[in-house]
View 1 (cartoon, rainbow, N blue to C red):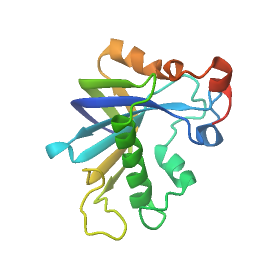
View 2 (view 1 turned 90 degrees about the vertical axis):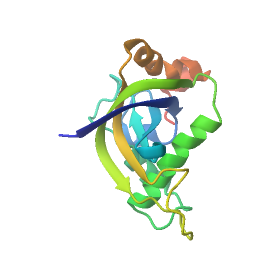
View 3 (view 1 turned 30 degrees about the vertical axis):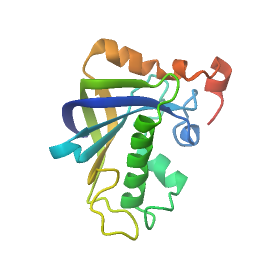
View 4 (view 1 turned 90 degrees about the horizontal axis):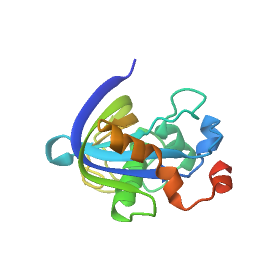
Length: 170
């Protein structure tokens, strides 16, 4: 059983179009991800898939998507590289908003944690964090406000992709 964490912080919800359908047999071919932070000074990144009924094969993992991406700028393959890439994904979505993305300045959230990576460190540096985060928690995320959760579930519809484009594998 997954462990849970919760908090209240800024939350950015965005579509993930990268290689999702290959891993999760999702008819939609895409997923919706939320990025938040917790801990002292926001030092812990939180990235979670917004649950959807079309995720037919159980609990998807963002770490699998990161591994398939094979990030090269974060050191050897493994949890540090994959966790760092996911932090970059969330941070980038926040600082470069896209059409249809949901940004909430402060709201409650709950994460069913599938994996935690601590002591993130960029390759070839003595830095002790990646985009201001030393830890990343990955899993399923739910917003505690039902109205905001409904908006989050609808993020794919706001991407500007047609229904047919949404159904195509990413």
